[in-house]
Image 1 (cartoon, rainbow, N blue to C red):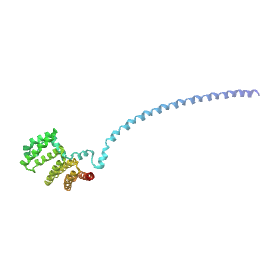
Image 2 (image 1 turned 180 degrees about the vertical axis):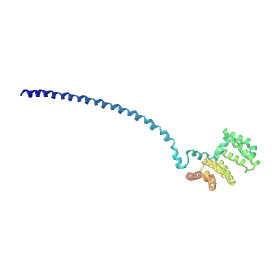
Image 3 (image 1 turned 180 degrees about the horizontal axis):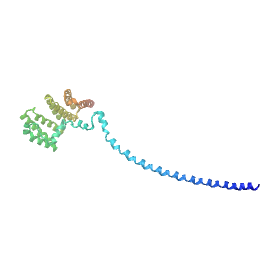
Image 4 (image 1 turned 90 degrees about the vertical axis):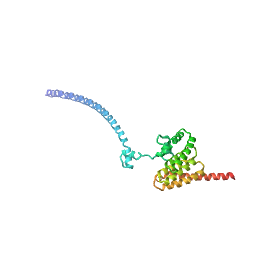
Length: 276
């Protein structure tokens, strides 16, 4: 009987030993996923170029957003398309006053305004302009004075060519350092032009007078000329025309009158203290 159990025990021993290989088998299974864990690493790196690629796309539209920038400003102020903006400045204000005279002197256009003026005055006015361009202001002043006298004799004092010549004479007086004379000549012309209902030409002469007046340094003389200038200027500004369209220069002239008044008062007080 004892031999049977021993046989049973002996036969069971192999059963115990058989699972051992089974326990060892999973070990390779555990090791197999390791490469799987490492495999996604390249997958993580692959999208990196994809992130970099859109960068130029983001930067590309910037010029497109910068170019239309002026458009909203135009629409807010005028409501017009961009193309219509230059039309508002396509016709600049024509030069007036001494600026207009200087352009004629330095330009290549006709020196006279009428047929009869061309016959009588082309040669002397050409010489006057040449003297001014050469800086021979005294010669130009003598020439223009003689030419005005001749033109008055032939054409009359109110003729357009005579008025044109007198504008040139006022400009030359200004260049010669005679602002008082230039101012008075320009004021006389402005009155004549206003009487003739030529508001644009009258305003041009007022601007010439203003330019010359601002070069007058003596406050008392400046006040005397300034009163005449501003009275005439105010009359022009009260009528339709360019003087009424832009009141700012007139206000500036009035402000200068206040400064001249202050300077004249101080000069008077200084003189009184000196006499005492």
